[in-house]
Amino acid sequence: MLDAVTEKSTNPTRHNRMPNIAKLKVIFEDIRALVNRLDNVFDYSGWDDTTEANTELDHIIQALAEGRIPTSGMGVLFLPTGPLQELSISSGWGDEFLEIANRFDRAMDEKDGKPCRCQGGARPQLTIVEDFGMDRRYAQVTIEKCRECGSLWLQYLYEHEAISGSGRWYRGEITAEQQQSITADNAKSVLESLPSYFYGGSYYFDTIARSSGPIQL
Image (tube, rainbow, N blue to C red; front, side, top):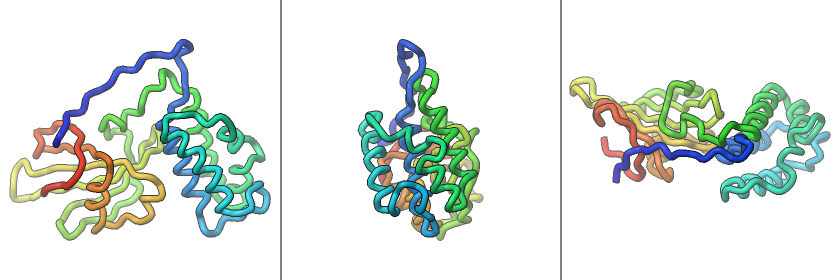
């Protein structure tokens, strides 16, 4: 069933600032992808290896997935000379760590805790980070990243040039781990397996809505 997108109102907290749990979850999923790089050097991180790091990160991600802020450990990872900074410097991704650390600080102190615009289907702040070209159905497949919150989106764009009003796109949020296994030919099935995805385009009279399940072309 195709459901129209509705914008939910948010109630300001007493101090008008609170952590954005959805953004934090994306941030720690991105961190996990970095921690799992094969050439990482753990000597000065405080973690023995990838398995030990994943155990700590998975505990945090699970809490965030349940809508909870972990009672301990989350902020410690970002401290100067903390586990993530030491691992990033030893492993050659210090710049990426600084970007994620800045996103973490913003997500921990976000006005009103409002979701990012990309979570409502908006695209202006998305930037293409991978272009897979066309699949066997002649649909364009790209992965885009939100410049505001860092979320990753898989986009599937289809249009029959000979048929007016046939343009349609589908966009679903993916994790950094899912990104590693996506190809042009499996992109459609990945989108169909997600809990939901946005869709729009001239075929849908330029409305933006949300759906799930099979994509009919």
